[in-house]
Image (cartoon, one colour):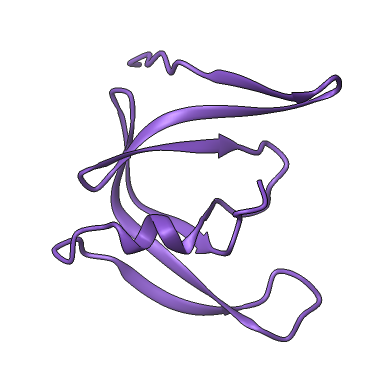
Length: 101
C-alpha cells in the first residue's frame, strides 16, 4: 500500500473555531479547500468551476436541494483533483455558494 502525506493548514477563526484547509490542483489551477469532516457532500463554489478550462470534461447533473428548500443544486464530477501526490478521478462535488466561509 502506498502512503501519501498531505500537508494541512489550520486557520484560526476565533478562540474555539478553526478551519482545516489543504492545497489542491483542480484542472490546471491551484486552489485551497476547506476540509469538513462532518459534511455529507464535498462542495465547491461556483467561482471555482468558472475558472476551469473549457477543455475539462465535467459531468453535470441536477439534484434536489440538500436543505429543506425545494431548489435544485448542481452535482458535478471532476475528471481529476490532486491533493499532493494523491489523485482522485471522477470525484463528485455539489456546487453551492460557500462564500460565507
